[in-house]
Every structure is written in C-alpha cells, then in structure tokens.
Picture 1 (cartoon, rainbow, N blue to C red):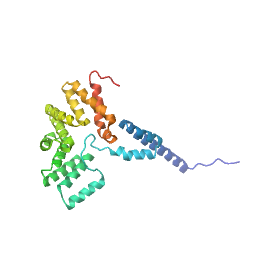
Picture 2 (tube, rainbow, N blue to C red):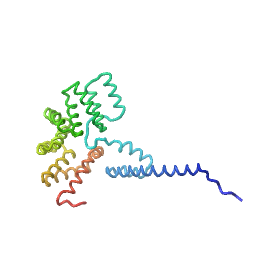
Picture 3 (spheres, rainbow, N blue to C red):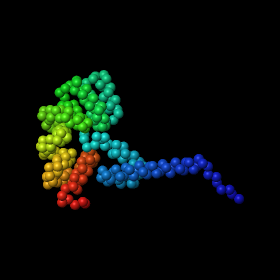
Picture 4 (cartoon, rainbow, N blue to C red):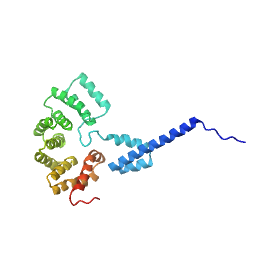
Length: 261
C-alpha cells in the first residue's frame, strides 16, 4: 500500500513566500495602472495589463520616476546623483559661481530647498549679478514661504529681462505678490504672462484670483482654455502640468452654472 507523500515545512514556507511575492507584484502592478489612468497614459495602461511584469518595471522607471518632487514648478538642471557628484567635484577644484548655481538647481528639483538656498547664496558671493542665480534663489525663497525676501530678487530680474526663463521668473513674481496680498499687481503680471504663454500654471492661478474678486466669467475663460488644450499637449507636458489640470477641474466645478460631468 502506497504511503501519502510527506510535505516538508520548507515546502510549505516556499509556497507561502511565492504566494506573498505574487500578491506584492500584483499590488505593485495595480498601483502603476492607477497612476497611468490618473495621468491619462492610456497606451501605458494597455501595456501594463498585457505585460504585468516587464511592463510594470518599464513604466516605473520610464514614467513614474520622471516626476520631479517639486511638482508643478520647474527649473533647468539634472537631478541624478552622478550630476551632483560631478558638480561637487567641479566646485572643489574650480569653485565657480555657475557650478554652485547649477547644484542649487539640482537640489531645488529634488525639493531640498535649504540646500538649494545655500548653493545659490554661495553662487551670488562669487557673481552677484547673475540673472539665473538671482531668479532661482527668489523662487527658492518663495517655496520656503519667505516672499518678502523673494520679492526684490524676482523684481530685479524681471525688470532687467521680463522674458527670463521663458516667463517662469515673472510667474514666480506674480505668486510672490499674491502671497504678500498684492493681488491687483499679481493679476497684472498674470495677464501679461497669459497673453504671451499658455502655461496652465499661470491661467489657473489667474482664474483663482478672478474668483476671489467675484469675476467667475473671466475665471471660466481661463479654465476652459486650460482644459481644452490639455488633451492635445505632449505626454511630457501633461505629466508636468497635471497638478494644475487637477486644480482647473476642481475650480470649474465650483463655478456657478457648471454641471458635474
């Protein structure tokens, strides 16, 4: 008479760990699918559903990690560790202002604002007239909730070059004025920006100020333009602007006469 096979504890443990692994991989894949749906990356949703292993890793490294920590704001500059080490080495050997400033840009993008401020100030000690450094320090101080310190830096750069950083410095100045309660001046800057650029960051914040002044029709125009342009924007731009698109949708729902769709 044959005896029943004996199942060892090792076999049970291996099966249990395999099950846990499958569950974790499934949850990770579901997380990436939800993220892709929120970004409206429909092609990636299909890839994740068809290739739940390789496709998930590809999406994580190619799309998910591509979002900067300081979401909704941008400055030029790489953010990887090799770039930081390269700049630190250049600073050690050459100690040039632009190397300090570029390192500040990297830290800004990573959300390490205190370190960014220190780098920008070191750069200004070596070159006090550099427009990029002054503008980026102003933006850094604004994110650190120090708009009073940010204002003279940003105003000085905008006075010298209103188009600096393709209008991003002027946007930071408008945000600074809003933070200081000077909404009328802020609106003038936002209007100038929206006449020359289609940045959702500018249009949404201008709409918010219109709503604060009980001008919903003007706000509606700005928000409708943002939402109408979003589906036709390149994927990288939609990823960058998604925080503003979300705010635009929420604001639209608050407008009188708007039905929830």
